[in-house]
Length: 527
Image (cartoon, rainbow, N blue to C red):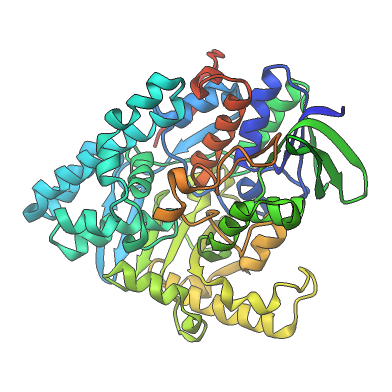
């Protein structure tokens, strides 16, 4: 036996599963196909500039915050430093010529919205009260153990059961009258990739609640998070293999069913383990690494019916503009010309988006302002994101990364121009002050992090694919477990929680019991 546990993929979920298992004395090997750990949490350098494709902000890092408790409890806090984003506006929203800044703190947020929209004051109070209740009740489920606790869950999660599966659109329509206010309250749909009409309110409440006390950014960019986890993993005798693709999950069948017993690497080497945890997407895990011929009809049906979240374009920019003198700060910037968010998502997912002069909306994060230590040589670095349908790029999905055809590169140039024109609404003059500019597409995402259809957030968390209807952590293949954005939840927080959930299941304890008091205190630098 080469290890007690093999973890496929070193994203936030895979590392969060591996570390507590290693701390519990299990021998753990993490296998990563990329040359750096982290999945979408990794960072890279181009022309001397550092960019982070998937980490734009993290919430719940203040006193008592859930992510703070995780980082401190898992013993990675000493190797992490976070900068608080602008507390007066960690989200800057521009809808056409209408502007709104969202501050840190639930009550501050409520008061700012009430001041701007006094006629909807009661609805605003009701909305954020419901967000608070849903978030509190969502945290109950992972900690549930034993029959008695299981039986009482419906009584302890009444609001979640009653309102959680309503759409965000219905929840807002029932409480809010001003269309612009509804749009401002929907902007964080960009953090899960679904329009309000298709978003279960519990999903959006979880995202909103995660950031209610503000946003934070890691010193050193996104890569700082996996770097801290890998350091702690190695301290606990865990291993990580980089630039090592997994070709197959090896299974055997006996009278009790099919078992996972190890993995075959791309070079033909085989490793054996008692348990296998896959941080790859369910489609890759089951169809490529296991094989459809070994799956039940029920699972095959689920794989064929499940849809994945929208893909995205990410434009990486370095500029010589003096953004500080232009009054830009560490907050995120969101822009769309459409007052109805449903229209934005319709336009973004239409194949005709490639013919538009501007993209339908954009998210802009100035990482050199979020992490002041990364501001060098007078140049700011920016990551700008816009959603797009994978269908636009499907014709080239079987081409290789370094050998795409000319028409693919021509489309990239066209889309770069449309994104820059849209970013001009936020940062005037940026097109004339580019020091570096490169576009990544959904195919780039597939290449580097083995996403499915360029997905940003794993499977879509619609009503039919959310909560108890999502892919389970425990597979029908015995000794095989899944974690990551397509299981419990998405994003850094959701994927991390999914990994901790798998580890707690294997160690027969509650997730909170893995967060031992290590005496570490996370350093958060205030603005």
